[in-house]
Image (cartoon, rainbow, N blue to C red; front, top):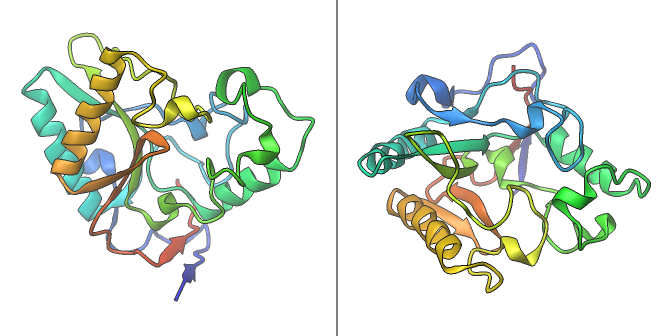
Length: 214
């Protein structure tokens, strides 16, 4: 049974959700939805602070990933974690406004925006809203540069598929490294997006939350 937990803005986050920075103080992040640097081009509803919220279980698993990467001079960079359902609803509304194409050339150059949901690039019920999904990449600790993954984050195209044949050998190796280290510590990826991972044993597999990030 699907359960929605709608929480008022003035209430605290649910039990077992934490701020990722509390568990991994040195985590690097680039919160695209708390900015205009995203596929829509505006701040997204539900993101009212530059903070990462996630379940404790997912945070502890990410801490293990970060620890392992550091041995190789690497680290994680997170783009998104918990996502309020209201943000997903905003995405759906945007997908039905055909004249707003401000960031098409960067994020979906080969796709009609009305097809983004039907083709599964975005879902009406996102695993992010369950609290144990993250979008992320790998960076070099020495200078903070991202490993070349072949596409930008949130690139709605077949090139974003983890095993895409349209990328070069180094890009494929970088994606495999990310997939391998995340799977080792309990996360499952999706074939369509090299950056997207959900904790296999997530604590809220049937609950989508809608509290504001603040």
